[in-house]
Each structure stands twice: as structure tokens, then as C-alpha cells.
Image 1 (cartoon, rainbow, N blue to C red):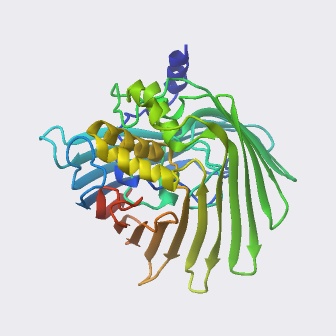
Image 2 (cartoon, rainbow, N blue to C red):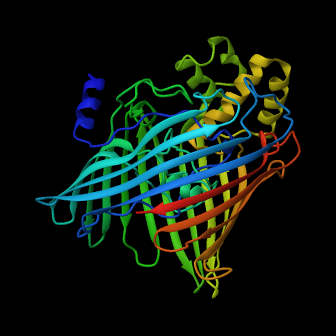
Length: 458
């Protein structure tokens, strides 16, 4: 019945997607996020669309690993060509249709000709918006719901699991913006005192194996985004300069509470905080349980991690400073209580080196964290600096870093984006995982990577 419902909902949508294998193995430790919550539906936005063609080619320098990777040698180069479109149509009677889709073609080394190329159609969003009454909106379809005010990690971004698609950058702003939405029904009311919204996402399929490719050419991979029944209640009162947001989230009967708060501090600084708390297992236990449920891991590995469930907190607190030269700096402290402690990391290294089977289980735990877009470690600092029109007009520079407070290792990226004209843009990204082999970022396969990106707009 659930499969018939899913196919019925998708029948009205003009685009569907193929699923794709996880191309972001090097981004295991990068949580996806953006700085603002989802905006209310546009009341008078004109109909129209945008179309672009992108090519992103990258090289990676690999390192010896403290825990060996199972399977073949990781690819040293990769290329992605994407046709990206976003459209909006006014269907009349206060009804609008929004569609966001990206068709990808991949190539990478290490595979025979004809197998090194894959194609995937990522249907990010496809939904109808109906203004049922003044300032009362009802939406149905595949919607990318984003909550949270931080950049490095968003504890209240409850619909992020399984949504990641390939990106040229490690910037969490881009990772959260360009991802798969969730099939849901959502209502939102905007009043003088603020706004309130409620979203319900049904369970349509059983959970998918992490990294599993599409089972059919037009598979939209709802098993990645609709593998559990979820609902989210959001209250956003209008208190002037102080912007609070309260959230209640439920997944499969398990409830979490969340809160966001932003406030100006002087003329150049905005402080913000984001918190979520609820019953949860530790990362290792949750990952192994998921692997057993999806028949990826044998049940004999269940005892490798504890199963205790308790109240666990997630927190992101920081500030944004903007200077007179338009430079903006974000500095954040990130805390994920369910992540690996120092004891967990010692277990990870010891078990991963003891046998090939356990090495595969340990890397599965890291892959699960990436798929759910959790930090694998408990405590990090995140810093991001952006400088528009830095070198010359239309050339923007960005630098960011995640620094583990457990072992001092870090992921760092610098990038330059050149908006050549209305039809062309180019970007370059240089990223490095820094730290000794037995550290969070130093244990990842890629020591350094470089990516060049060119986009043609139509």
C-alpha cells in the first residue's frame, strides 16, 4: 500500500530521479547546514525557471590509513557533469508548482570503460503550494525543509538524514541547500505575532542500504528520505530583534525538542544558538543497528557497541561578525553528545586494525555518520570567513575549517569563485584533512584534494 501511495504522489510530478551511490566518502565528518531557516512560501513570486550546466573535476592525494579501507583502492580523480534546473509555475487559483532537479553524469578512475560512468537524476524538490486562506499555506510533495541558525552543524535540521547529493565544495551551506527533499504534507500560518507550521512525512519504504545504487532507472529513492514516519511542529514568535524558534519533532514514536535563538550584539555582530535534545543511542550502536536492519552487517557484530539509550543533547552556539570591507566571519562551538568519545575512538582504531571484517564495520560507522549528516566526534570548533569582491569585482574568497577538540585534527578548505558574467562562473576549491593517522580527520583516506568547477547559465 505504501508503494502505491508513493507512486501515486509522484505521478503528478514531471521529474523523477535515479538514486546514486554515496560519492562523499571523504566528507564523513562534515555535517550539512545553512545559516537560515526555511522561508515562508512566496506570495507573489513570478513564474519562471533557471537552467545551468556544470562540470566539476577533482583530484585527491591519498594517504596510508590507520584502519584499512575494505575493497578496492579509492579513486584518485573524479568528474561530474550536471544539468541543473529550478522551475516555478503559477497554476491559478492560488496554486503554484515548484520543481528542482539535477541530472548527474559521473566518471572516475579505477574502473573499466563503461563502468566508470554512472548517471543519476536527483529530484530535490517537487511540490504544490496552495494559499487556502490569507497567510495560510498548504504544501504537498517532495520538500526540502531546513531548520536551524548555525552553519557548521544544525541540531534542529531534522530532515537531513539520507538527503546528501554530490557537491564540489565541503561548505555546509551548499551541502544543505542542494539536497534531496522529503515527501510530506506541510501547513504554515503567518500572523502578526509570528508563524506556526506543521509537517508530516509518512513512512513509504523500508530503510535503504547506505550507498546502494538505484534498483530501477526511475527510482526516486524515497527509501532514503521516507524510511520512517516523522512529524515536526515549529513555532516562531515575533519578538523584534530577538528571533526565537521552538520545535517539537517525532520520529517513529521518539520525540525530540529543539530551540533556535538569534540576537544582535552591537552593530556588527549577531549571536546565535541552536539546541536539540531527545532519547538516542550512541553513534556506534545506532550505526550497527541500522546495518543489521538493512542486512548490510551480520547480526554477530551487534555486541561491538553498547545499546544503552538515554537523553542526549546537540548544541551549536556561535556568532557572525561583519566588517566594513564586507568580510563575514562565523565562529561556532559544535557539540554532538551521541558522537564518539575518546574511548570510542580507541575502540575504533583497535577493532579496525584487528581484522578485515571489523575494519569494514568501523568504516560503516563512519559512513553512517556521513549519511545521517552527524559529526562523528563529540566536540568541534567551526570557523568560516567569506570575502565578496576580494581580489577584484565579482571574485569571492571563502575559507572554512572544522577543528576537533578531541585530538586537534582538522578539515580545512579555501575557495575562490569568479562570477564572470551573467552566463558563466568558475570556482576552485582546495581542501585538506590535517592530523596524524590516529586522529579524526587524519584517519580519512584523502590527505588533500583540489576541484575545479565551471558553470554555464541559460
